[in-house]
Length: 430
Image (cartoon, rainbow, N blue to C red; front, side, top):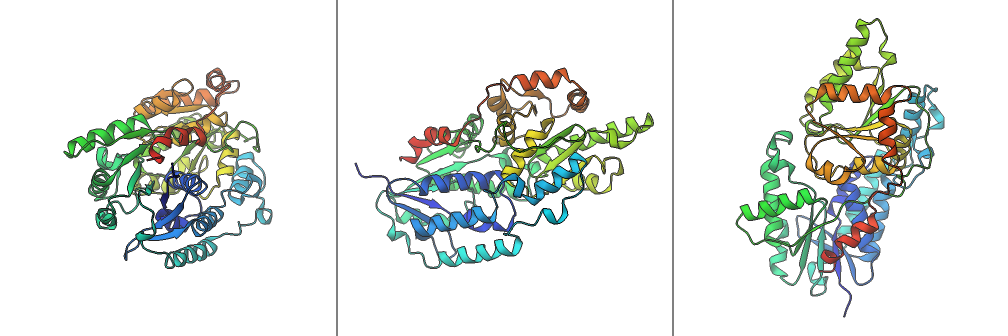
């Protein structure tokens, strides 16, 4: 039997170098690009343009993926990440390393240069006639799906078998957390998928159920859905670089936006600060809260607190541009991960933290139960006093609550990308 030809959609990877570090979807896109292009059989890259899709050969596609990964400095050690070095020094009460933490070679201008070069490579691509009959087309990012005309070429090539990865339906199920108009755009994405998909891959059973219900609601034929939990990079492990914070340090990871429920944590920190101020204690005795992620949309209330609430200015720290090895080192050093989200498609930081040996307190939502049952502690995302008690208990010297959560992680092995692709193999074989 001839080996399956696969064309991987590179469009999102090419456009994302304006950011210093990848988002969760970017990391999935990168993992799939590497996996597909390294496989046996004919391999191609596909880039969606206003003039139609452009097809790139394997060598050109691999060069684009390598350039993007280098621009995100994903393969450096934590000790070479200037963002991590400065943050670790601050949390440990050490002087800023200054010149010792030199900026990474690929700064904003370097990434823009790489982005321009990769965009230029697409102009040398060919049309979809270059794809062998029966090619599997793999799209893992949601990008451009709200522009159905970009996928009309699939009507001209009915032999092509499209496989789409759906990360979540949050803009549809929880439109209040998205940008204006995002619910309509995501509904259009789902219609595009429902019209064209040969198969669908999802990151959780919860998302899979939502996808199947939505397609039925659209009145379209059901599609085969494969559930494959996202893999954890090998750098997330208990052993490795780290540091000793000068006081208890809690992490919350993800884009700063309302559905992540950062506001609950900021209000909790303010309540703790005000209570301690009433007792005559300085805010410097408060635990630290580190927000890992860039600012997102519809986050004005959160940003107002970060910029204008004096009570939390000292204990709360924002950090963005942290490399994946830097994040892993930070997780090895912290007290616990706090994940109070109202809704998630998966919740990758939950399993990354667990793989790093970091106790997890997560909101009691279906997908957190799906991926964190057995090691995480679950709290209602509206239970402010409960989250305050958890922080104070976990941060106490010799905390029994933290010891219990840490013990649950003994022998834990997070889901691997190898396991993910083994689960997804049926879809990727067509």
